Length: 164
Image 1: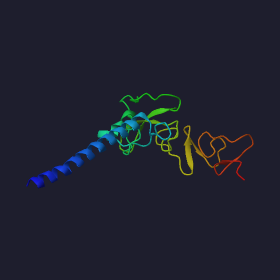
Image 2: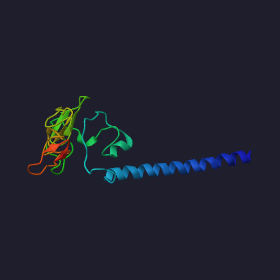
Image 3: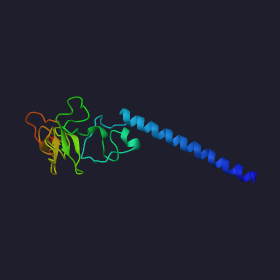
Image 4: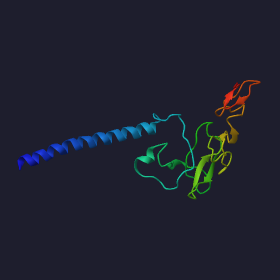
């Protein structure tokens, strides 16, 4: 009987160690995401969002799998909960989402579902650049991507300046 109980204790110790390592890894990942170390482009993407407030680790993430940002809710007088810093946020407005919740959306940015105003979507092949729907394949001021300007006399063809 002693050999059986000693054998079962040896299996418990590695499981506890494994659980501790997993918990520590998850904590480090959340801290890295919250500090912005893992962001690929250094800014917050705001899209159509869900209305239910998430729980647990999702509250700490800027870009989370549930697509919800707790800091972008609107107050009842159409003011945003979060102060948006810098010029990258051009025109913040309270917009209704698909779940009938008011959320703060930057309609002057590159959100193709709220381009220039709430619920103004850019149809394919257009994209939103500075709150305006443009065709990135042919627009000289936004050739291939927003803000990419072709030189004087150059044309934008297939998203490339002076394509031959």
